[in-house]
Length: 434
Ligand SMILES: Cc1ncc(COP(=O)(O)O)c(C=O)c1O
Image (cartoon, rainbow, N blue to C red; front, side, top):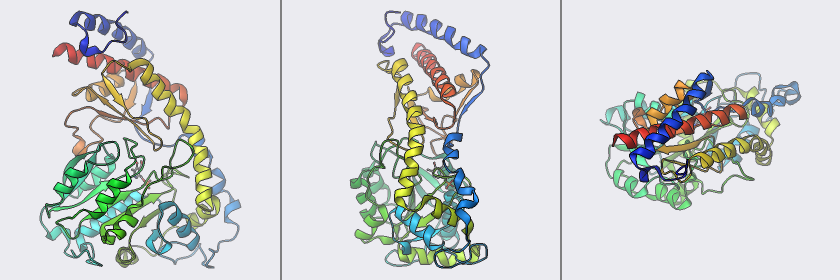
């Protein structure tokens, strides 16, 4: 067809109708294949998991004592064994006195932290004040950079916070808006994924990190939950360099403002990794005063084998290069298909991340749910439209998160081709209805 690469909005209704019939022929062909592909969650694929198989062999558990001579098979050590603290502190860019190494999930640490604030307040340590439990402070409002991570939003939804959308701009949140919103004392904090954000892949600029650290907040107990889940998850040669938010907060005189979180979930084994929470020395003291009641200690055997297997920051980066080699072709394949099929048509934009686990796409307004539903008819499951927004409500119904990591290349490529057909169909149907 001659107008194949023309912007859809510039086509006549006749041209659009003709194109729609063509696309339905392709769509029905796919539908008849009775495929069953799942691109819903950002999980590592089997080849990635295999990179860490050695870690669970006896090789890394010859001897059960940590470098501090602590017997890891028994109770003891609340804040993590020294070699695991050293490893995770290097990765998170903090001092070993600013970290606690914990169990298998950083999300769990975030949930617990917010529940702690609700029940006991933020501790009132250092300069921050605000020891009053949040449950006694009325309505809690929470800033949610969007599009974002669905599980963050589920936590703050469950706790009854009023979530406020703050658009991401490509290098972090709209800071003018953030600085305006934090003048409200009911705004107690925000989520953020500073590097290779889920799902946009963006890296917050140092300028925005500085503004987050220095801005005046009406709430003295304002807290940033900084989830650095993808800090070493690059697709190129090395992770993006970025100012550490804890350093920036210390420099700005707000050391208690932030807790940083991270884990080895997508370095070794999701669900069987080790996690870490970092903060100022006062914040760590606050945290340990509650953790000591919650648990006798975390899984030190797992901490020990992680420390021995990954060794140090250089070891982590070498390991992440092997992940990148597996993932790079998958991300490139998605980008290539989207470019071949949709570039110049004015119906889809997509991200070109240098790291992380996702490609984020934006359809024409009002089309995302229809695209996901249409793909499902062909047996391809994408993360439900709306999931990247609080309360699963994308006000413009535009965003879909693509997770290219798990499926084998052939499945991924077929799924993205099907996605393209569905985007074309739904866009044309919308334009024809206007
Ligand atoms: C931004 C972000 N944070 C946290 C997690 C989960 O981390 P963990 O396995 O340490 O609980 C994920 C998993 O997809 C994620 O995307």
